[in-house]
Image (cartoon, rainbow, N blue to C red; front, side, top):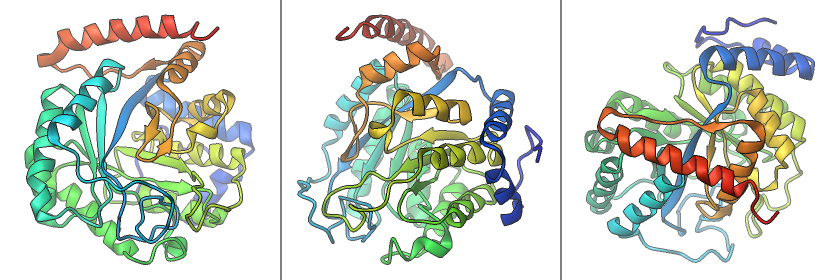
Length: 348
């Protein structure tokens, strides 16, 4: 089943997606790699840093999430961070090579009283020359417009899984709630970051359903994070069965084929992935990662390990160069290359 390498479609059928999943593994990866090479530099990976700006006590009951107030996971609750503290984290992220800074808050939706602080965070991070992304829960039209006016580049709001499996994972908001938030984000002019989580006990048909929902949106998300469930003690999914690694890689490859111009992000779960598995996801079309030691509240490979892997694979961080910031960005590229060279021998 050969796909056009540039065509963006919004009419994927279940049978068509199933046919992609049914391809021999090598044929699927070959097809995904052709699509990837046609639309992106195959040896560049976009690098983002994620910071939890407000941790814990979330009223949602997402069964995978240690931040839910419904479960006892031992997570220390924290108030919304001070703006200056967030900007210090953003500066450090930029110094280590990140081009996008993502800020997440454990809210059902942002409160009116918190919006001025959130907006100042967006403006401050933008002033550093970084792309900005936030995940704050559901948005109505007004709050989406406020964030867009402040200069927010991306808004993250994952669909998590298929419509059919959704209520087995979350009951405190509906699938349509999530789609409505994505609609408000798109109408405001912001870019969308939306994906899902694998390994929650979903079926192969649910993975097909998730990808169809994402690809068949009126405009496909610019960023599609594919997460491997991180099983946290105290959550209902702490004893979920492991997902086969090859099924995870297949899903990355099918996402790349269905959404040829989106950045497909290898997201949560990388801590448990071998270097060889991560290399295969890059071969399958993943071209974005979260960088640093933590994703909100779960572990992530340390920065030096990522740099070592990039060095071994001949991968470079994708660079974001703006006219106003070109000199500073070039200095960071040079500094990052030195870090790569040095860290290759880290603890040798």
